[in-house]
Length: 397
Image (cartoon, rainbow, N blue to C red; front, side, top):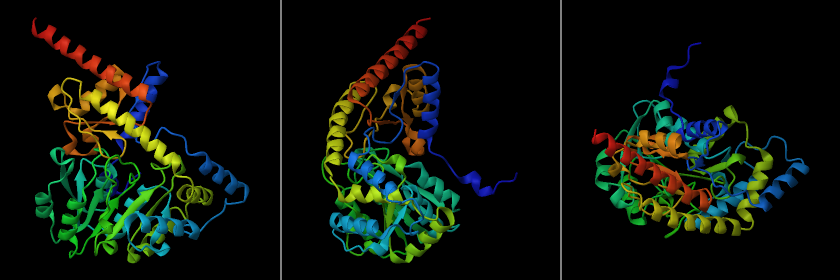
């Protein structure tokens, strides 16, 4: 069987590979604390589950409109209009099975060989994967730890070119937990507003923040018609397995996304859309409670990480990831992540799983219980102390 050569350019998501290996170790009797996978450890709120059950009983089990149920698109448009301070109609909203299809469809619809895409590095690996798959050229901008894992704006300006077709932003960010400031986004908007390009603004963690609420570049003058807002229900409402997300996009892109939906999925499951409608219009207390618990875990976990010799961890402003710098341990990222899983029973991800500029970092998801997080830190510290002791003994031979 001869595969399309483009398949050699497509990447993967390491979190699922590490999860498989961690499950294998558990099957062998090893205790593993899972800090690798990026999903809330909370149950989907009860009123959302009840809405899905009711929808099934009412017969919402058939095909629906490719673009999404009108009432859900109206609710999404109203929500985005309120949160972003813009006027968005339901005609701009496309409902899709998860957040990734918005990345996939937007890039397939817009990118050609020879185009360039500026994107953050380290970042969600599917950005680079899809850029390469489309035959475009990825142009990574390293995220600067000293700036809260934001772009070096001078470098961003230098990397813009007549070939730049798309700029990818992610705030709050995976894997760093960084949140782009309004000032930085204003400066970026000034640089791209008059260029023939589109901004893909990945806002999937928009409700999970701890200090200042995230600001969207789509809210700035002249940017709504140049921006694709990616969001969904997976992170905010603990609905990762429901597979439902959406994009809010310029009118000229809607038909293209709908055509790609018809050719790939036909439509998003009708009963999950009814559940999503209950999520976005119903009680938001479970979201606030979840974020409050994430804050409690973040504060304690980061404090303890910073007590591990060789670790330095900035306080994340959003999402549910800690991204400590581990350069002073003397380890490279991937070997340390592998050793922590195999030897210490702590599953995490190498910073390089998110791009080459992730070297020197690890990513931990603190979407796990408080007690498990404290035990994970104890195991990491114990492992590194043991490794240091072994090196000292060997050095004396």
